[in-house]
Length: 116
Image (cartoon, rainbow, N blue to C red; front, side):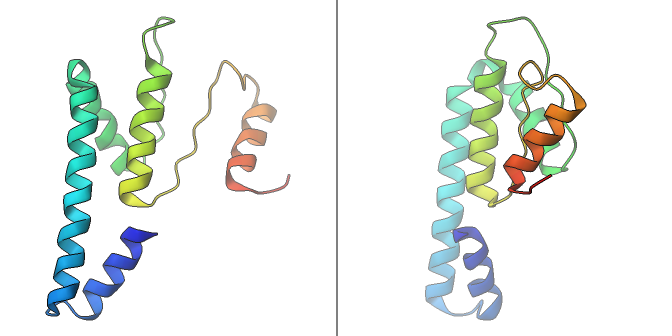
């Protein structure tokens, strides 16, 4: 929400000094959050760059690998930061927990707050 409000204020009066301050503050917060994410996942910098690029392109992403390697923590951390920075909704489905079409559809509808 904050990001959307910032965009509206900046587009309405981009020459207003207070609007520029608000935009600069928003960019500073975004930069700090990205830096914190990068520091936390420094050993996965290639995966972080790829995952963030895929999120930005609004692609479906399927992550798989050996148990106990940090996939869930990584994905939830990156998605959480992405949501905060971009004020966008991302659906997360754990295919181990939701292992049928009906369960996946139900999980998506719950996250979207839609009744099926």
